[in-house]
Image 1 (cartoon, rainbow, N blue to C red):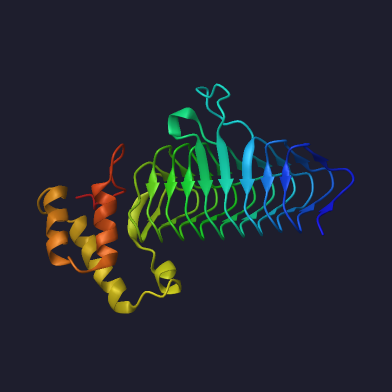
Image 2: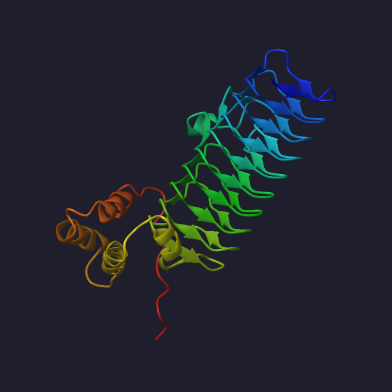
Length: 265
């Protein structure tokens, strides 16, 4: 049942699953694996040691699995692993990993990458993530489940974005974004919670109100950050959602947290 157009070029050792459709003028490299029911529309290039999971559709002029845009990359064998049921639209670019980042770029399931989105080397992306048109991730970025990244937003390398966060369009993200957060602005700042995403995700009004209270406390002006985190641990010790925020804060490494805007006196 696999349908390969006569103009497509397929590497002799490429692994092609059942019910795969490869359209006109596509190029599939010899080390590529396309799982069942993958669709490459037309003019798609899939290269390198790339795995594309079942049910994923890739639209024209996408470049998937080409060498990383990293001057430190010396041709080492690295992978791009894409999960199942993703939609990858026109002109999207995705790169494999490097030796400096574990040799893998990994993308979860049920994600949507709109026109011109870019996923750089060594990124780890969760499930149900949406990247709007021309949104870009630098290398080594971590993106949690159900994150939405707005059009033309740019995320600095090594940044972490927690689950259910939303990044406003055209935002430059230079600090870690807490789970459930909403950030916006030329140099992104925390503008509250992702209320729309939380409601769509089935969180109750009580849960959302509790999260808001905890986030206000986390970014308050009393005491140090460590003291505020300790108080959160005490005040919300049985709340799994707040626990997720606390864990995210505890795991910060290279960058600080994206902060709310402070009023100018």
